[in-house]
Structure formats: structure tokens, C-alpha cells
Length: 597
Image (cartoon, rainbow, N blue to C red):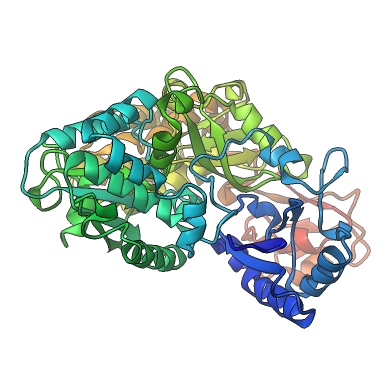
């Protein structure tokens, strides 16, 4: 960073930009100019701070004051009070919801206390569109070290010793994957970055690319050096316009600084990066489908072997890693494998980035050491369940994962532990559910997604998942039978065992995990024809309590199908045969006389 007395960091991630952080940045700059402070105070647009629940975020250095839920109209007050008078703007500081303590330094907040930021180390700290700021934070030092001091094999050995495993869901050892590609001789090789995360609610890779694109470019160049590749390709979905823009800027800057292109840092090593755009197909997260898409073909997986390390893009040896995996590489080279593998658990080293979402107080992007428990994530970092409601389940691994219950909360998060309890790490989506969520409907939602996203190449996935969805839909309509539950389990097993790729092999996980952990809820749907959570409309009934109804007629006057009868000042009655279950009556009732049964 340039030399200023103070820096004002403004979150420039997609979430905060949607809440007017650009206007905040402009207003801050205008207020600084109006006070003649341009030479003393700099406003810096950064990537995501992670605490999305409290955005837009503004952080002031060097005193580390962390302001939350800032609005454009707050800019002038921040400059007048904090910058000029040296007084914190108390109303914009974070208040701990439990003890009501006002906290100005983010390191004392529960959301950040247990986090260790490696992949996210620069997000929320540097301007992602300024390569000098990345260099000031040891940027491209790892690439320089590799080219000047290390052979390709010693780099691979360092990555292997670190214990880094792929963060895209498979968890394959990264160093071993690089070694396979390095050993295959060819006149052309490729390094591919998979930036096509498709899990609903997941935004880990997008945030890294928006906040620290140079870390990925540096890691790709290091990978290219180890395997003898001079070409890198970033496969990114076109729905990430901000990430694409910042990647373009980063690639241009890296070329201008001699960090990409020919003869990098005078070493004789050539490596350059281009982008390829995806149309948002979930199946293109699978590496062979991704490669086909980049080649201009239909995004369909192929049988392995051959693996991409042997025959990938254009039939040449290709290494595919996701964004988060690459973001760890420069730190491992700079700090050493021994430093990295001391973080995490015995079988999973380092940290993992999660997109924490759902019925939780602190929605956001977090990075925790492997081995951190689900309880720590949900209650200490996530701040517990919204509105004081009861925790019901947590879905890890997105559509490919499973729904875990309260008995699983002390499970350490890593690849093997999550698989052992019927879920998976996936790319890092984590959705928390409360007592108002129906697990049958949740399983149906994920099956609807995988049916829509299946490439259709193999029969078990194309037809099997559609049949699973049909059975679940039948159950939510109150038309299911107990035999359907056995059919769900048997069909799910067949799909897992016979599908071609990871999408089909893992798609039944939400069904199997909810059957295992919430079997009583399924029984309630098929035998009692009731949805305890009140989410399945066909199984709901709106009922008026005659003891609470005062006969105000507000409900009947707002019913779109005139199914509520009753005289004024007398208890009303709902004709359930006509009711369309829109909820208008319950919404309008001022006396809590209408409930769902």
C-alpha cells in the first residue's frame, strides 16, 4: 500500500456491492476531498471480509476499527468523527448479540476468533485490482523462489509433504496429482483452474477470485513450472461478472510486470493464462465434463481412466485444481510444508473455506482449520440459530452432501469424518436448518436440482434421479406409502453404485441421509399425512381457534376464494375443501386465531 496516515478499507465483494458499497466508497472519497485530506487518507476497495450478514463492511487502519451495516449517507460522519476528531462512530460498531458488548476490533468477534485465513489471507485487506498491493503481501515471492531455488520435483515434494488435498470436493492429494501430470511426456501440457462452483448458496471460489486473483495466477504458474506446462486456462462461469473483470485486470498486470508470459523473472520459463467461460452447468464441475466444455463440446463426463493428467484438454496432459486449492499453494511454498501440515487434523491438513448460510445468525464466508467441529462452526462462528429457534439439521456438501443432525454436531470437519456420517465436504457449502424446515421437502429440493443439472449421459442418473424426485413429490402431496420409503432407499443405492460420474454417484445422499436421520418425519408424511414443519402445502390445514377469533371478518375479506364463513363478532370457520392454502388469512389475523395443523 502507498504511504498514508490512514487507510479506509471498503468491502468490494459482490454482496456488499449489491448493498451500495460503491456509493459508500465514492462518498468517502468525496468527504475526504472536501476536508483536504487526500494526501493523508486513502480509501481502498477490497475483496470480501467474510461477515456478509453485517455488510457493507468498512474497516479503518491502523486502529483496526470494524464498522458494520454502513450506508452511503454514513460516509461524511465517519470522516468527521473518526478521521478528524478521532472518535469512533458507536452506532456503526458490532454489538455482540449475547452479552451486548460493543466490539470495534474484528479479532475479538466470535465470527472471526476461530478462523485461520490462508486461502482468504488477502481478501478484505488489499485492492484486488492492484498488483503492487499483492506483491507487498509476499505476492509472487513463491513463484520467484520456485524458479530461482527449487527444481520442479522439489516443489512437488513440498506440496506432497504439506498434505494439501483438493478443495473442490474429491479431496485427492494435490502433490500426487501434480506428479502424475509431470511424469507424462507431451509436446504440450495444460494447467486448468476450475472456477465453476455450482452448489446452491456456495460462493467460496467467487470470493477468492474477487478478492485475491493474483494468488490463483501465481499458483497456476507454479503448477505449470512443476509439470512443464506453458499454458493455463481458467474455466469460470459467465455469471461471475465481477470475478471475471478482476481476473482480466490481474492477468494484464501480471503480464506487464513479467510475471506471466515469456521468460518469467528472467528464468527462461514461459507461462500464460487465458479464460474460458462456462454457462453454469453443475455437471461441468466434474473435470472431464469441464474439459469437454472448454473444447466447445457438450459438457459430459467420460469414463476414467484415462485421467486428465494423461489425456485432458485437446488430448494433452492436463492438471485440474479448483480456486481454493490453488490459493493455498503460494503460502505453502513461502512458509513451508511443515508450517502448513501442523494446521488441521491428522488426515486433513490446513484449512477449509465454507459458505455458511441458512437459518443462522452470522451468514458469511469462513475459513477454519480442518478438524473444527460442526458445533463450533454453527454456534461459535455462526452465532447460533436465528430467532432463538431450535437447530434441526445442517447440510454439508451441497446437492451431493447429506443432512446431519444434532447428534453429529461434535463431528470434526474433514473429508473422512463427514463421509463416515453420511455426508461429504464437497466444495464447501454449509446450510443450516431449523425446526421450521421439512426434511422431505429439502431432499426433494436437492433432487430437483440434480435432475435439472444431470447431463443425461448415463441411465441411472438421468432416469433414476427423476424417479427419486417423483416419489418424493408424491410423499409431499400426502400420496406416499411406506413401501415408497423402501423404494427410495433401494433406488438410491443403485444410482450411487452405477452412475458414471460424481454427480450421479452422490446425488442420492440427501435422500439417504434424511431417511437415516429423519425417518419418523417420512413416516409422518406417509402414514399420518402430516408435515410437522408446515412446509408441504398439500398436508397443511388452516384452522381458526373459536376461543381466539373475535369475528372481525378481516380473514374472510382477504380470502381470495371465499372459503371463510361466519357472522361479524362471531367465530369464523374455514372450509378446508375450498382452501388453497395461500396463508392470506393467517397473515391478516391480528389475534393469532389462525394456525396450521
